[in-house]
Amino acid sequence: MSTRNIAVVGSGYMGGGIAQVLALAGARVALADISAEIAQGNYERLLKESDEFVAAGLFPANATDLLKENLWAAKDIEEAVAEAEYIEEAVPEVLEIKHATLGRISAAARPDAIIGSNTSTISIAKLAEVVENPERFLGVHFSNPAPFIPGVEVIPHEGTSEATVEAARTIVGETGKETATVKDVTGFVLNRLQYALFHEAAQVVEEGIATAEDVDTMVRTTFGFRLPFFGPFAIADMAGLDVYAFCYKSLQTGFPERFATPKILQEKVDAGQLGTKTGSGFLDVPADRTAALVAYRNKAYVAMQKLIEELGPAPLG
Image 1 (cartoon, rainbow, N blue to C red):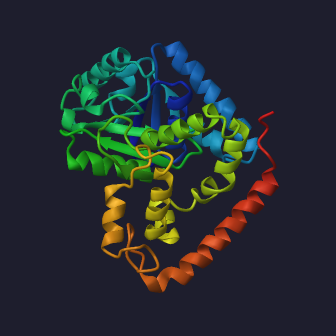
Image 2: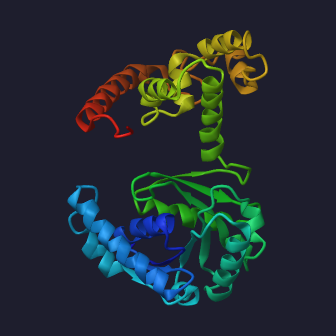
Image 3: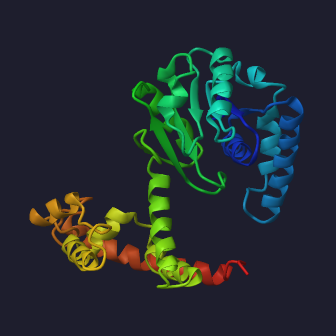
C-alpha cells in the first residue's frame, strides 16, 4: 500500500483504529476531525497506544515508527481528502452529522476518489444522497477494535459501481483483513446476526431458564467455540442438515413461531442434500474431503482450548 494516499475522517476510537490499520499496512494516511487540535490530539494518542500495543506484543516492534512515517494529522477535512484515492468516514452514528461530513468530503475530494462509510446501522442509500458522484460511495464497516478484528463488511447501495466495490475490497484486503460484500438492508449482516443471538439470550434470562453468566458459558464453550473456524452454514453441513431439520421440529413444540424451519433448509433436505455426508449442502463440500475436514476441525478445537488455557479467564469480575 506504499503508493496509496488515504484519508480517515473521524479520529476517535473507531476512526483512529482504522487509520492505524491502514498506516501499518503502508498507506500514507491523513487523519481529520472537527478541528486540527482534536485530530492532532488523537494522532498523539494513537502513537502512545501503539507503544503500549508493541510492549504487549500486539503490534510489531516497528509499529510506532511506521505510524510516525505514514500517519499525519490534517488541519481540516478538506486538506485531508484533497489527494486521497480512498476516504473512510468514521464520525458518530447520527444521520445529520454523517450527511454534513460526507457533503464536505465529496465536495473537496477528487471526483474519482472512493468514499466509504463505517456506519453499522444507517442505510447506505440514505447516506449516498449527499455524496457527489454516488457511484463511488459505499459502506465499509470495520468492527471494534479495528486493529484486531479481521472481518470487514462491504456494503454497496444500488447505485454503487462494481469497480468501486472491487477497489474497496482490494484496499481493505491489502491490510490483511477479510471482506464480505452484503446488501444495503437494515442491520446489514453482522448486526442482524449479532442482535438475533443477543435477543434469544436475553429471553432465556428473562424467562429464568439460565443466568446471564451461564448463558455466556454455554455460548463460548459450545457453538461459540466453533465460530472462529466455521460459520453457521459450515457447522450445519458438518452436523447434517437432516439433523438440523429434526431439531427445528423439536424446537417448534415449545416455540412454533420463533423456530419455524427455514425454507432454504427444508429444500436442501427434501433434495437429499444433507451436508458433508452426501457431498452437497450449503457449501457443497465433496465427500472425499470429509476426513481432512474432520482432522482440521479436531486440531483447531484442541488448539483453541490450549489458547484459552494459556490466556486464562477473561477478567470480568
